Image (cartoon, rainbow, N blue to C red):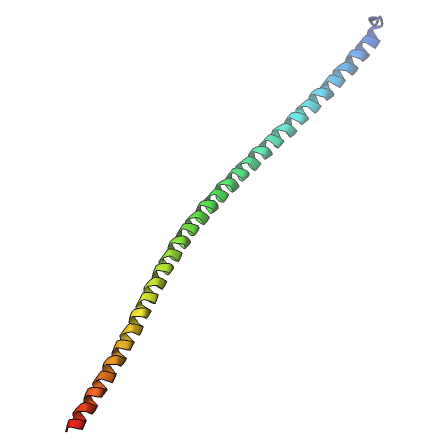
Length: 116
């Protein structure tokens, strides 16, 4: 490399390099700001996603609880249906017994009227 023998030229080259360095520093600072802003945006997005994940987990747990409650209710309904079916069988048997007793009483009443 040849040194600039002319001091004016050397100063001009130095001033141009300092100006270029100043531009690079300014660009660097602007890029740091952009990176910092993007980092902040990313952190906010991560917080939002974490909140959504937590909400999804709460919904998943609630759905599981609802499924458990639904299963219990289905079991209770099945038990109630069995009870109703058993009661229905008992009711029919009782109605048949009542009909048999009515017929028997009717026969006794006829027999008593026939005697009298």
